[in-house]
Length: 135
Image (tube, rainbow, N blue to C red; front, side):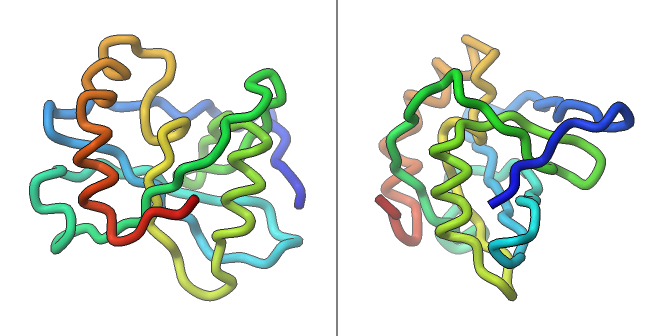
């Protein structure tokens, strides 16, 4: 299960602001256990989530936040995640089809206190609107 290393030509993913009732969803791109992890992040309105944007919510232990790895995001960028999240994503990744997942550590901009505060208020609705919660 290889993590990506940051190449000089790669940029860190730049989180865009979210609306008050919007969340980010992670599109986990298909691949085998030997492939590097690849994803896309997109925003979606929370109110019509079940019908328009079915997703799975991931509940996991963050683990050692100092043990960070990078994965490819939106083709030209990388994003830093914990090794425990990487392991969870590897377990969830389908070899053929993408999966749409909400995981707090990557779907919430952890460096933006105001966004984190707004998103925490939506956590109950995020889990309630998920097609399935994976623990």
